[in-house]
Length: 391
Image (cartoon, rainbow, N blue to C red; front, side, top):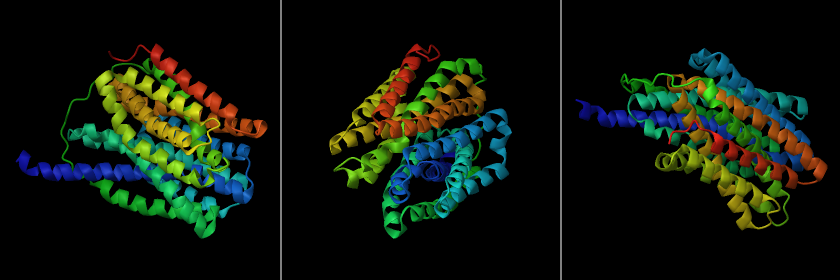
């Protein structure tokens, strides 16, 4: 009987995974990261400063922080269909309406609430898909879920130039919102099939530690959030203003996404072979090197290297860090995910604000990128000092 139903369970598990990936495309790849390729269009058409851009990004990450804290304090929110459904609608609506206002205040408000929705959806999708797959012993598929973020980045990098040709920066926002709505509908149709996966009651490990055991892990994750976000926010804008590379700017974001898609599988796979600490250290060092190379990069080769090393590491670090937190906390994995996401959010909230102000004052991104590389290197040092990893 078990063998007879196995193909159907495989198919249903795959639908759950694809539905979750589409959710990541919508809430992260579009709702959160589409700002990066649209930013240079807003600077071109509206003369937006780097300071304003940094504050808009920072407000988005402030909303993300609030959402993560809310999920930490009140984890029951993760089970509420009203909350998650409202978060999905908010993510789509705040993307869509960005194209219908010209005031910084309303842009900031929309990005703030969009970030709040992103945090809730990211944690909910991560937890629910992971639990649904693990019940049927498909836990090894979970890393693929985060590839949806990279897929969304690729999609945003491809569609924004086309939408720009149709109507400029505002058409890029409106069109992205419409595409997010369509993908959401498809994701819901697939993701709701998780109840068809026959549950198997497997024993989950008891909580193996307290939140104190996550201190250094969370501190390193904070440094990663503070450092990576400078590139995540401004990479396309930086390349747009680099003589000779203007036409390559949007495709650099596609390269970031292409590298991010397999990274959530490859890095955890490497971690299983050499250990979480060496794998995380390697990812941090590679990312810091890519950021350093991006400083003053004037060739396509240097830009591609920076894009690939950034895209190929940041989601891998996310996957490995959340996996390590879940291992340390066992059955209390939800709180670990929420706490780590909150620490990450504080860093990524401060990063673009500081980078934008410094870029305007220094007339360039050399200093912000140097500081970003330093933050990521600091994260690597904290990983090296953390004794919580298993040998």
